[in-house]
Image (cartoon, rainbow over all chains, first blue to last red; front, side, top):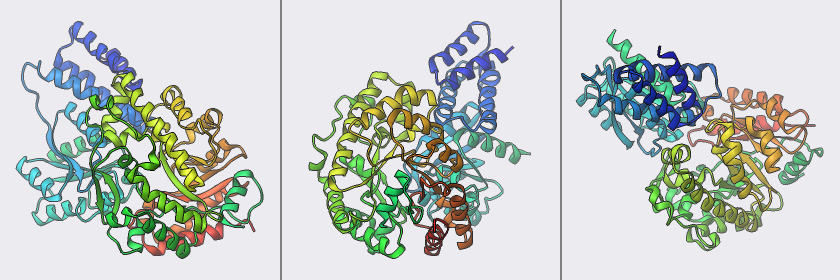
Length: 221
Length: 341
């Protein structure tokens, strides 16, 4: 039943046509699809299609990733307001850019996808100190700290992920809180995440959401 | 032959003794002069002195007049740059904070009269007089379709490009294009003989090819309407192979600086025995590589691209964390494996 909506919606997102994507959702609602079904049977599967597409087709681009997150977040927010009961949140992520880094595009894509996948996201913003990441993760009982870095020195610097790892170790939190990194430097060196003490990494924002969700699920199991 | 003659011969397909070797050392200059980055970048004389010292020390082919990308934002009104002792200066104040400000955003009437131009002019004068006759002097210009990203932030710009009002988007790009045209003229006049024209929004990594054809390309034509001499097409480390033929046909640019992930054989096939393309080493890996791993990758790149000429070996913007021994190993290997004799 939902396959046509998913296909039409994804085609619009791939063509970077926001209006058409929203029209597909509007049509679905008019045809009796509930807000809950829009999120769980159209939006989330659509993000998963994009996640799979990134693996199969290296030619997906940043614009498509951005649109995937942007539209999904917008539709989800609208639908959540109409839910009969609040949805179950699968986990919580503390996200921000590393200390000295002011680039927020990647973070925004990750956040958009995660919110639609029922992951609670606490955005600390840009240029965030290591202590702030860890303190927030403890205070908010988050399972994941996600750090975005667009520059080599902010990805590898002593005040970034390396320090977050050291603090997690010092406070005996390594089993409870996982560290995920992403951003341009990691795309150029796929082993770099291990050098900065991260548990995992992603080459793009959509894939980062997939990895974070899986880490939360694995942690629960 | 001088490095400049080698580059020129490589572009025109004349015999040359070796592949040109570009090593892009920018942030290293402050360390060379033992100055804090903010102080170092404040004076063009410092940048030129460090570039000349590094050229002498390492023996690569090119020098840079560029200070950092945020300099363009400063020329357009940015008030704050976040300097770091361990890396690239970052734009910390966005000139355009909301879409409403696009209408009142203005570019300098004459970029060469702007206070922030002075240090680059000073730098270029020194470089030009010292090595202008013998070495490539590189300048960096961000294309009009990408420049707004450093004026308003990449996510805000992406939003405007993809789902914002078209007239507002194009008003901003039109202003940026006039600025780009001014910069290119100014750089050439000041002595730059290689203009790196950087456009991530001219790469299919950023936007679909259809958008590049319909939107980016006409603006790039506008940016470059005063001539493509010495223009190097660069995706800002994003892949460009998918647009190379389009760029050759539409822009008449035939010098390319692809990303490390672009297939070198494909890059060479696209230029089809004219102009120049480059094999670009993934220098972020050099931070943790051994000297032998560095040499091996240089050899790999040369083996893929050297035959048939029209090929340059280059780096990204070498991160400061790369060990000195790896820079030396890379350049030794580049001269060894890049030799045609």
